[in-house]
Amino acid sequence: MGKTGRGRISVEDAVGLLGPRDAVWAGLATGQPVGFLRALGARTDFVDFRLYTGLMAEPYALLQHPGVRVMSGFFGPIERMARAAGSSIEYVPSDFQGFERLGLRLAPRAVVAPTTPPDADGWLSFGLHAGATDVVFRAALADPDRLALAEVNPRMPRVAGLPELGGHRVHVSEVDGWWEHDTAITSVVPEAPTAEELAIAGHVTALVPDRAILQFGIGGVPDGVARILATGARGGFAIHTEMVGDGVMHLHRAGKVTNRKPLYDGVTVGTFALGSAELYAWLDGNPDVRLLPVSATNEPALLRRLPRLMSVNAALMVDLTGQVLADHLPGRQYSGVGGHESFVIGASEAPEGKSFVCLKSTAMVNGVRVSTIVPRLPEGATVTTPRHHVQYVVTEHGAVDLSALGDVARPRALVGVAHPDFRDVLSGGLSVRSS
Image (tube, rainbow, N blue to C red; front, top):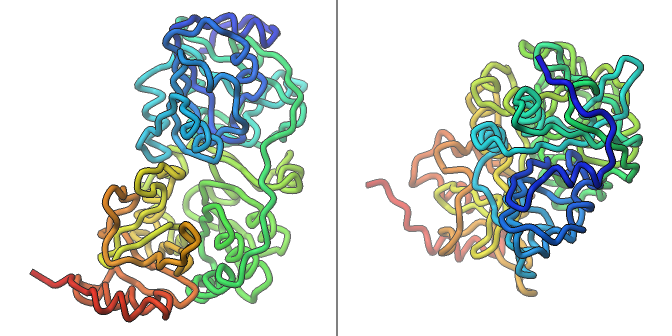
């Protein structure tokens, strides 16, 4: 049973509920209370203040305060820029559902989430984000020594959940305080896929069967896969994903989604949405889409129950043993683990499932073109997904299934999908042999 809240308060009142030594959980991307974080930046008395967040929407003034430590579950451009400028910001090395578990274990004193305005019955929807916030918010809601605060944004789309998982909503009478902040919601307008991304998408879609259950990561390749499938002959798809992006909307509009599946049958499920304003308008009140806590979407034990699960995710680099680097470059935290490894494991172990790790065969580094398939990961690199979980690796030059290959055949197969300009060098450096 929830507690009786304070009712409507000002954002300044909300900020005043926190002490100079305190801890706040504030969500990722579209689950970030922008007005609250802006207001925090006006304070100057912080001594040891911890903010748990990720994929920040803007460079909040709070980041410049020496008494503030930011613990990020997923780096984006703002985090990278803030760290380079000297802010105290650290990456928490966990996957997405691990970040939820961390929030439950640490129990930060305040949890703040953006919501829709209350409906006619007083329910606040978490809108575009359940992620690692929904469950952590409810834990704070039930604890009399903690704060569960809602930032009402009239622009937030109302998206449903499932009743057995809390319904992706809380009642306005239960929260410890709420205020209104009208602001634009973080959006990402998908860019047109490049020729290389479309080629990669073509190799992936050739391996996707009818009635597949689809998961898409972020970027040009997943968007290209969705667009090709939306206009192709195959159909009867279901969607079980981490991120609901514009590609999911295109598949629905093309009549390709039937959502016949043994888990969450009849609806598209994800844990957060990030995309265009058009996507957000499409999601508002849409009965075909449900957002669930990340532990209900990303857990590999659940994903193994989904027949023909196809997982499409990006990488930055792959070495000749099959180790995948997707979130970290030597000396630089680039993004986050997120659901990468979870969906690679779940899809590759699901009945007739396939996981695709996708990357362009080359990248520009300091004005020099380099191969993204390398003999070995450079010193200081951090593995996102280990070699024993990887199934398909896909570049614009083809797709290779590593899962049935030994340590002698694997490097040769990966050389075959590397850029032709680098194949001789990579072949000359083959050193992986069975022991």
